Image (cartoon, rainbow over all chains, first blue to last red; front, side):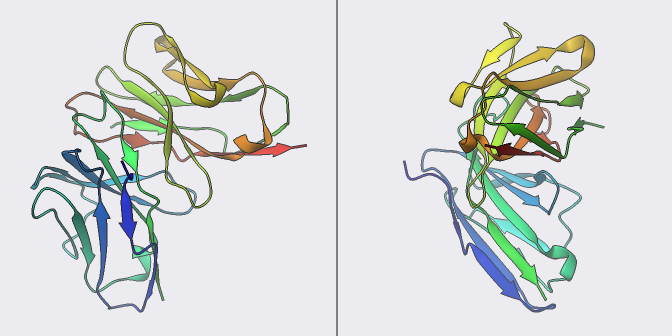
Length: 115
Length: 114
């Protein structure tokens, strides 16, 4: 068990560029979550996958954001035409089953800075 | 709407002193409650969780929390704080099948002075 892995850990980009983050969950976990955390705030839910199916999306996830989990293993979060307001820590988490009944394991996050 | 309130943004305690971090929630369903800790450069780590049963739950690192339904609270406590406890603490609430997500509070930053 190597834990939840996220790459890159830091990304600095210019406004208008596209960025992609990758998350590798704990191998046997079927559920994968993306959260966003801004300074002084707790994590906010963005989207959730069960296996390869994206089952829920927050209204925070504008049409510039897209997430995939093509084979039910790793996931990518792409942000198109980045804006300064997208600067945040993007957290990935995984669980085996319902996290309300079990435990949600978090990665260390990918920090995005949009200049 | 579901919400979690952590009234204290910062708390400073002396090493060896007792600690209580406050958490109040508003949730439409029977809640499951969690406390997570986040150290700089680290991922969120689960300290403890409450689902049902005994309202006083024990967690890792000597932490405990008490669920009080009448007060909609789930306060985190530790009898004697260590310098390594300095971190940010998040309270979170969820419910089985209720959106499949956790709602987090804004966090409380704990500083420990020697």
